[in-house]
Image (cartoon, rainbow, N blue to C red; front, top):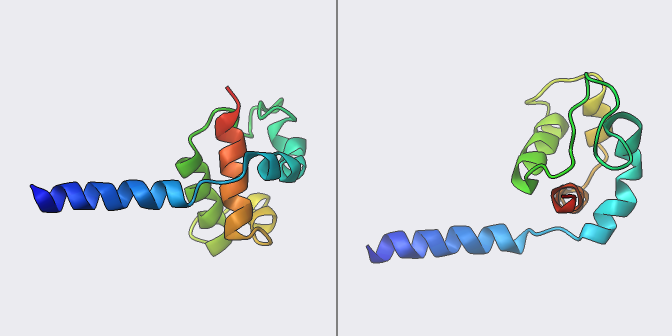
Length: 98
């Protein structure tokens, strides 16, 4: 039981340690607005809404595009120049939009 509690605590700490900066994410989100909308709601049905999306999900997807494990001719070049910090900030920003 003690090991489970320690693992759960360590997992929680790793999640909070990577929390992004919402304001920095907002500033960086201008790159996303053309497809995903200025407020994270896409006007085009082929692009997903990002508003209110869970940060962990956004981070996972952006990293997959960047690493090439998820393929998309539009998103791959958009994700490539993003740093891990940029990704965390964007994820925090879009999650903050309710």
